[in-house]
Image (tube, helix red, strand yellow):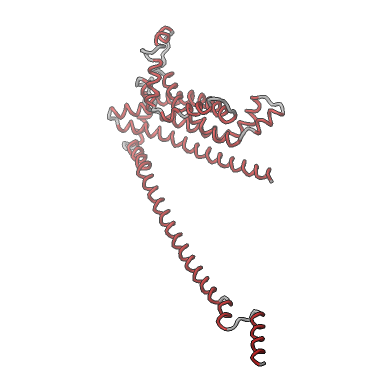
Length: 331
């Protein structure tokens, strides 16, 4: 009877959740607790080691990037500045105030003032067609817009020489009407337009595709005309991207050398832009004058670069504002 009572008490204790001895210690969680502490310690050590390696690799990459940047970009700019001012400020001013240098500067500005507005109009029209409409040959048009990126500028200059030179099909017509295109200012302008054409369109197309055409369609439904839609709806949305493309186009037009060199004829004081004038001075071993004019061109490029950075920051700010407005409308 006593054995049966003890057995019944043991069974009751097990059914109530009392596990004796060693089994109770295992279930209480003391061993798993130590094991989890060890795991967390090891994982934190591994994470800190990985984080340290990532920081070291990032530091090495950043240092290499700065070294390459200093070697490829900063050191040549310093050489240009040092050579330009090597004989003092008087020699620098004399070099950039020479009549041929002034003529090259004026011609460069003239080419920029003609080619950039024309490319702005062409770029806006091309971006409007590509982003707002679906039509046959759209991919062909996009490919043609990108064509100047892949064609060598020298080849572009030769194209205009073949079209409007003395051996071309239009030579008789041009001679009869006393029109000079190649080896004159019109040829330089045409070559610059060809080389700089994609910049405005390529700055506008992604933004206009991202914005869509809902606002224009709403304005059209409300009875607005095409010009009114463009001036009051489309242009305010793309103004900073348009400005960015114009800045890029201006920078390329000022520094274009290959295509202009083919069609200009290198007539000193008449068809030489600043890059061509620098080449002539360098070939004549007039190093101080060449680097002085290069400093002038470098200063113009730096101004354009600062304007480009400002316009790029405004584009990013406008995109963030547009996204926040869109999220507020959804909410």
